Image (cartoon, rainbow, N blue to C red; front, side):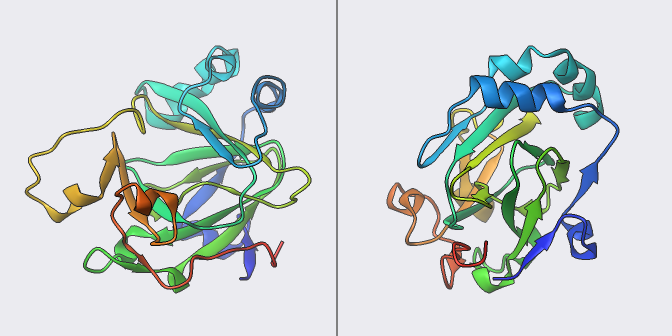
Length: 211
């Protein structure tokens, strides 16, 4: 799989690079206060990041005054497994280079998305990126197996936390996996085995041979 850069023109329809902030305190907190597991660990809100002055400074910019949760997704991973979307952008920042596998919400047809439509983008260490609400995404992939990844995940407060009951009158309700989290799983994924909507068809992409 060809791995593009977030500085390539192709990324413009999926997200953008955010400049102007000194994000070093966030990187320092990720390194000092969060784990690096062999698998993937996600925490919606991490106090060591949430309490930083820079977190309070950038929060109004990220979501226009909405409450923001600063968490992390850390570990080692090279597979797609699932794709999710929110009703808003997600912001990511890594201590090391990492790779995002992305697709577009508009490419979902009848509840299915062909994984051949996905594109991979490398995010350099220390670069803050916005992933648009219409960009399907999931856990980062590492760019170096020896280093893994430690990635900031900033979202509106309450996202990915708990479940959300609906009256079930739309097809999209079948995809709702957690608060503000609509999920399409590959049949090979653990999420599919746990009952998530199996919406990815084709290969469960693995970038291990491309990094």
